[in-house]
Length: 195
Length: 154
Image 1 (cartoon, chains in turn blue, purple):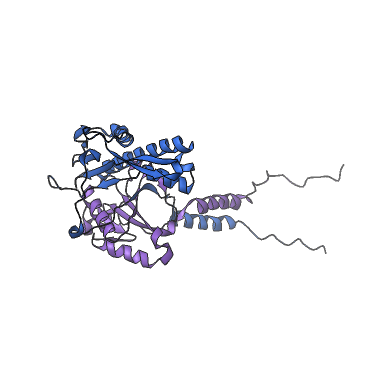
Image 2 (cartoon, rainbow over the protein chains, first blue to last red; image 1 turned 90 degrees about the vertical axis):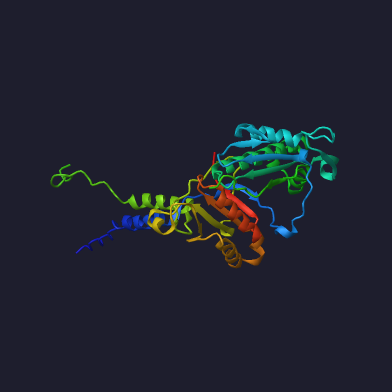
């Protein structure tokens, strides 16, 4: 009697096993990629130790957001679209003319990698918001300011190294950061007008 | 020629389903590769993140602590109200607990990794700045200065 070929193992349940695993993964995982605006907070100084740092008004670029989400740039009503260009202007123009109250001053710092003494602006960007301002607008303002810094950094990076800022080496990046320090100050929000 | 004979009526051959598990496995591998194990179940409504252009990707997922700020999910509305609340990893907490939470996260990590810890703040775009400023103040007090505002790419 010829041997009957052995019956094949029924593999129709393979698909079911695979579906089970798939459903498990669909339920237990998320496709969230964590991306966001990266900001370093200033260290906390308790009120007693806070010394009044004298800031010359012309070095300060004031951005104020009130509880109705109206934007005020340098004490004048402004629009969010103009914020980036105004900030870039503020960061790139500098002179030590005492009579000029609009343009910030600069100091001369020796940065060896950039070929010697360079003018480093004394500009400080100050962002103040009300407790009732919306988070959305706040992020937009932060985004525009960070964008302004990145644009000026890229500009300097191209001027000195002919490459974009992200393509630079570690020490070259540090040199550009010394040339344009990221001085962004955020004041305590006031509560004008209640919640 | 007479030997070759087909016995009986022939029904069209059934479609072979031998490759079905393969297809399912491919889908499975896609999901395994493109997703992350969810760390905590959200007790607050999934926050509608704001949009920004200057986005950086968070490098090490293991060194990130998540803070969610959003109104609570409908089941918890009776308990917590409709205003945005803070969820730290997997429980809704009061603002004062933020410092404690950061300390716990620090202790759970390796000492040499502690300096690289970042806090990811996932807040709904319609929250008011009051609660966000409180969180920032608490983070500054415990010296957790690396902050990432979660946002979607514009």
